[in-house]
Length: 115
Image (cartoon, rainbow, N blue to C red; front, side):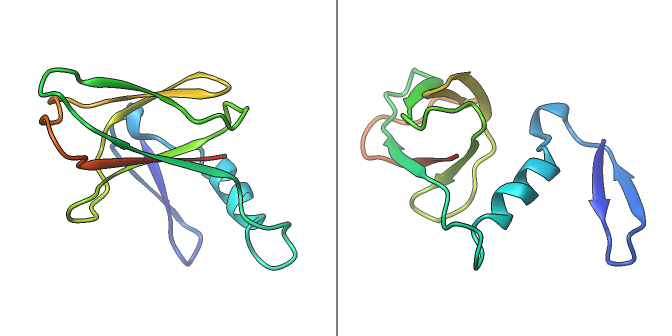
């Protein structure tokens, strides 16, 4: 279940697939460091994925030295965020999995890792 925080601080529970849950406190703590007096922006790494029409899983080496990362995959063409499976596989790597293999050719997806 996901918890939606409303302005009156009442909680409303809605069903959600557990693989799409985010640790809200970690995100809040991370974003607090970006504002004025918070020490600046978090380090990030971005890379484009070029599919081959067969492969569905891609290992991303981000080199950030931590498993406490946020990963976003977006469609380069239209800017939409793409829901993928994401696994943190090490201090410097994450794995991104698509349900259908990205088509061969030009990059269509950009993976950004923040942490």
